[in-house]
Image 1: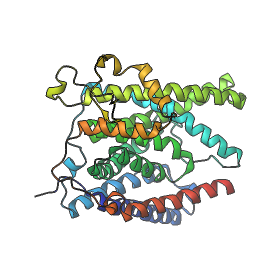
Image 2: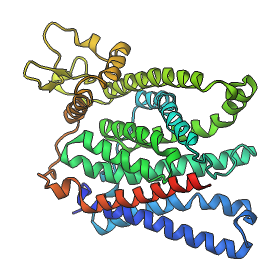
Image 3: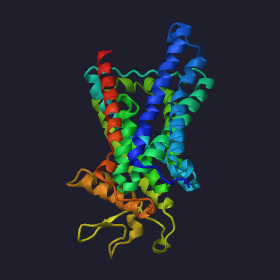
Image 4: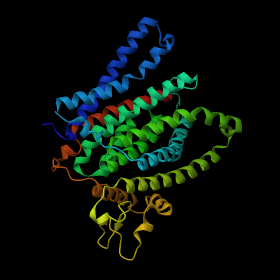
Length: 385
């Protein structure tokens, strides 16, 4: 009989193997074609585009092999067997736009500070604006395949193993950190961390990996599709020459509005993802938690309050954002997320009490160390270029 879940204490090995496989294949690939064509600049387009497939193949293959070795039912363990409804898909599409609005300005502020210290912002990607064919190849190799393979590894395997502790906020943060660092460069660090946290949340709430795959694809699709028109708009309007103070003002406004919309849509997504329960037969929603007189958070609304007006409200979403900067704001948010997801996610028969090693396994620590070293080397090289 196959196991229903991955073990968090072992998934770090699979994560490290996935990256080792990718780097090994990538190095061999580059050596072979550099010998054939003398230099990477002489590579034909087909060789350049095929290189983008190496990462997805390495990630998916590693998870499949790991699942086979550990006798895990990979489809159910990664939540690939769970479907989404049309409301969830629609919210995910809107959420992808709001994530870019919220997280890209945060990343821009971080990168602007780095650039002022002499950091180079260049990343080498194929030009998807060269032709219609290049654009659609980009959608396949830089949007669709990475969306599936990265979600299959990060949210399908690592997140679903980490959640067994039932500390869902911890599972979200640790996988967001791994997802951010695994891109290997400071340019993508900030945006990918926040996006990774949202991806983990929607997968946990919906119990479906397809929520992460779709949101990830929508994000990649928008990034590729809007790059050229937005750049041309800034060039025509002269926005590139604006005073930095104006840019910072625009970014701050976009962050506040975008983050509020992200929280608002996450609450909406939660409300349409909650399974039917007798206690929730009328509203079928859990989108807010409340603190009772004993300081305990619960999904039950206090007496005298109309719960339906407390849920999914835009103003309430804004208060959730500003509440993070109050005393114990992040701690309370951490607890609230655990209460919300904990009320949705059923206790699995295989859940057991974990030791400290299970909670933060040595192989996960090693993964963070290796990814951290790669990130630091990328940061240093950015200053030296």
